[in-house]
Length: 134
Image 1 (tube, rainbow, N blue to C red):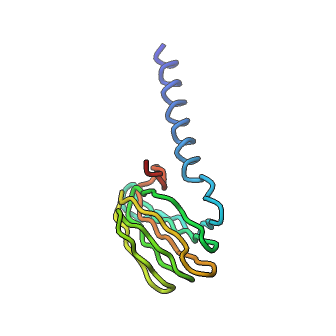
Image 2: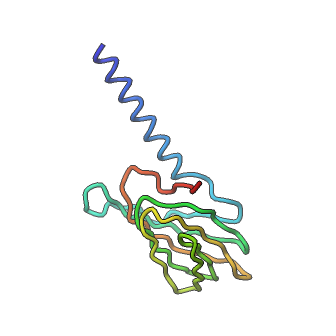
C-alpha cells in the first residue's frame, strides 16, 4: 500500500514538472520569435539565469505577463514600448529596463521596422518562466 502511494505521488510530481516545462515552452504570439541564448545555474541554491532573444515584427506585441524573478530587458534594435504595471516606457536600441519579480508587464514594437530585445531572467529553478496575467 505504501509503495503504491509513493508511486502515485512520484507520478504526480513528475506530471507537474512536465506541465511546468510545457508552460515555459508556450508558443509566442504571431509576429514574435523567441531564441534561447543561455541557461545556467547561478551558484545560489535554486536560482538560475536564462537569456532569450525576442524578435518583434512591426506592430507585434506580447501581452500582459509576469516572471518568477527579475528581468532585464535590453533593446537590441528598433523601438519597443513596455507597459510596466500600467506605466508606459519606450526604449530604443541600446537602452535597458529592469522589471522586478512578479511585476505585470507587456511589450510592443512601436517602430516602423523590426525590433529585438535580449531578455535576461534571474529566476527560481523549476517554476514556469512566464505567467500570463488575468
